[in-house]
Image 1 (cartoon, rainbow, N blue to C red):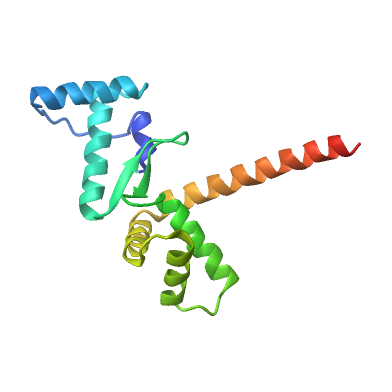
Image 2 (cartoon, rainbow, N blue to C red):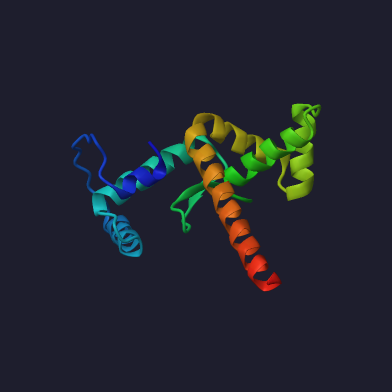
Length: 157
């Protein structure tokens, strides 16, 4: 299950009665209003799910975006961006050790090695989700490059 599964109907749910304090209920209602398509129940599920993930992986936060909510480093980029940088660097420098790869990404990104390791741990737990985000970013880049090339061909005559 991914974060964006909460935007649709989930296959199986356990009925649980939960009472929220007035302030929490107001904040939840505001979250629902800001996220069309979510019900109070699906929003509560999403936020609990994210909270549990953040508890399991300190330093990870969740942020909204055009592709949906995604995991990111509290003091840095999205997890998928770190994972993609590591994969590309490993392809470019296959002889690098794990420590050398971490140091390279830290030097390029300005993100501390400990946070990069946290992103790797998160990826290890939610590999399918993060790999799908990497694939979507790569597909979007390829489509944008092809659009640019078509425009260049038009301008060239």
